[in-house]
Length: 316
Image 1 (cartoon, helix red, strand yellow):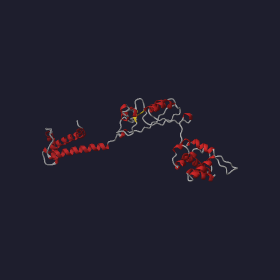
Image 2 (cartoon, rainbow, N blue to C red; image 1 turned 45 degrees about the vertical axis):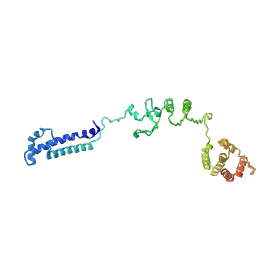
Image 3 (spheres, rainbow, N blue to C red; image 1 turned 135 degrees about the vertical axis):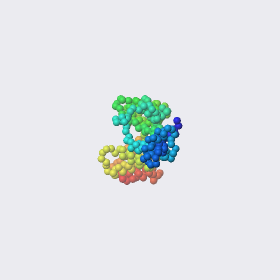
Image 4 (cartoon, rainbow, N blue to C red; image 1 turned 90 degrees about the vertical axis):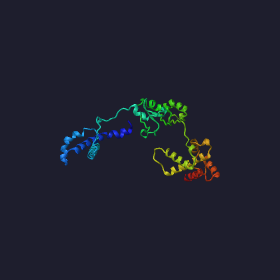
């Protein structure tokens, strides 16, 4: 049976039957004796059986009119009932939630196993957040709750890492995940980076000066450095903060723009600060850093580091 027959013909078959039945009533009224409505209505008692002697609907004008009126009336009655009907959910008073089945999860699973987030041993979720059917799109956020030793790392995190289908940022407070999966990820061509704040000998290092390219970068770095090293105590006079900013800007600019590449690091900055000896009883005394900036000023009087250092010396 074609879809068109199922969609248009079957729903209208009852109305065809109603049309046929009422057309027969129209036939009985038409062949009843009499000229007025009352007489014909009484005469229908005799002509009613005659009208149904054949299965063919009446073809007279009255027959067709009564048949159409009956079918139209039935259609309007049914539509009225449908519109006024209340929507009941029988036997669903306590909810309809249930455990999912394989068929429920099937639309959300990628055919390629490696492209899935592993939820359980039998349930998976595709990494593709834009599937062919938009209604099947799901976000990949997952909340795993469990007590210590319940397997949050072993049975959830480790299988995801072994999928090796994306980039990962892993918080590993125990250090076991790195030992278990680090070599595997390297074999899969991953670049593994480790930040260990407990044992620095096992941690990679970060050199912020390597990312400074412009004078604006110098100021951004110095501002962040001061903001994160001022401690929790009460803030001092703003004058000293500005002087500190000028000094750091001068030193960092000198290291980045003038120093050799192997010395462009925080160790050099600390060494320069430690070399800034000051003698209160001799205002003409110059330390090693002063001589460094004097030499730079002779070579490049408008150098950014020189200008910042001169402002610092003026303020101090």
